[in-house]
Amino acid sequence: MHPDLHGFAFDPNDPNVIWVGTDGGVYRTPDASADPPTWDSLSNGLNTLLFIDVALHPTDPNYLVGGMQDNARAYTTDRQTWHGAASGDGAYVAVDPFQPNIVYGSIYPPTIFERNSNGGEGDYKTWSPPDEYGYSNGLDGNDNWPFYPPFALDPNSDGVLYIGSTRVYRSDDRGDSWKPVSDS
Image (cartoon, rainbow, N blue to C red):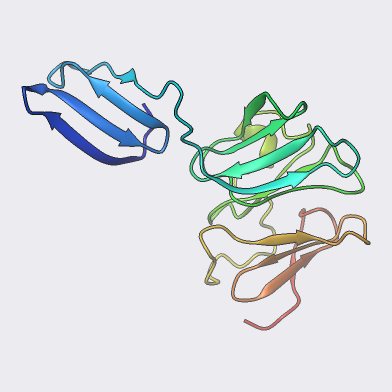
């Protein structure tokens, strides 16, 4: 069952039956007193993903990547079949216009910014550097960051990115390091 629950209801005819609404759909357990209870997904046919952002590949019209609220990121290479990538919240995404195998994404602090060099494919580890706190070198974690930090790629300058908190930061090396370019 998806971990983010938004509502639940007890069956009025059987208090052991619970229905749950989550970010991943609807689930039901026939025996809430079981240890642990088993959950059946009742989401077949439901579209339960909330896309925050989508990004297009600069040369491949069939490739898209999307960032989703609490369901990480996904990409497609045929505009039909989506493949899950990363974990947690997906938020904003972009495909590098100079090296389209590199895909970027923002996520809530303390991680803030992530990068993937496999066209978006892979789990959390393929999106973050070894320290597992994203590409945040030079970003001030004490800034007032939005839950989903917006960022932009400079389409005219290879490797140049901008990301915003209460100030704007610039990276000249695809997010390996950041410098503030505005006051807070």
